[in-house]
Length: 263
Image (spheres, rainbow, N blue to C red):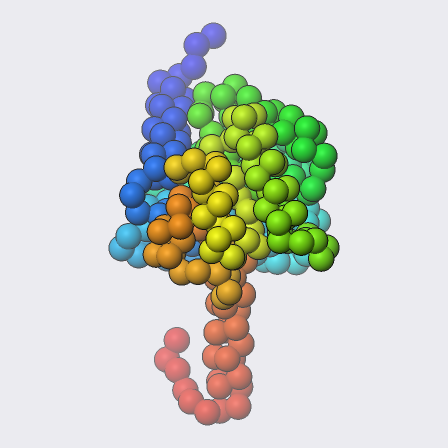
């Protein structure tokens, strides 16, 4: 039995969006990804001039369903949210799939079928060889679904620094990142790395278009990250937390009668 024209067209569209997302990592301008958590947030971000792609935030999606982060949310709820976001916008969407929810192959395949063309995959500080094998599994899963999935392989060296010396953290992140790139990852996500010298060193070792970072209050701004050689910066749960903070402030004003609103 052959695929219907609609199925083939969707596969072609997904492959094209994946190619667009991959190309954006190699543009002169750093790829800035604002993380969404539902259809409303995705559409709001996508409509902002200059938005070229979207990322999802696992912690924010989990919170919306009443779960903590770190794969506590049932995978079907995460994938359903990701699917709704991907269907709501015309831009490439990359999904935070944490550590693969116990089955990297199945989770990646399901995410691609849900419409995403990129994914984050955490190493959880597993042994480097094991983590690299999981990266290779994810890349193969995307290819098996007919999409050249853009894999953003995450290492938690800096987030789980455990008081190690800066030189040790840099060496570990470098070794892990190179192993993940060899396994087929498109870029290496190093959240928690904010030192400009370390960022420049990682960018130099990984090569152009390969370093992905997390935007935090203590990290250099995007323009500086671009100068240092980073290809991509995303913001994880921070937009969601800031939105909730704004909502709480709004609620406080309304509940104490400070002002009135028409809706």
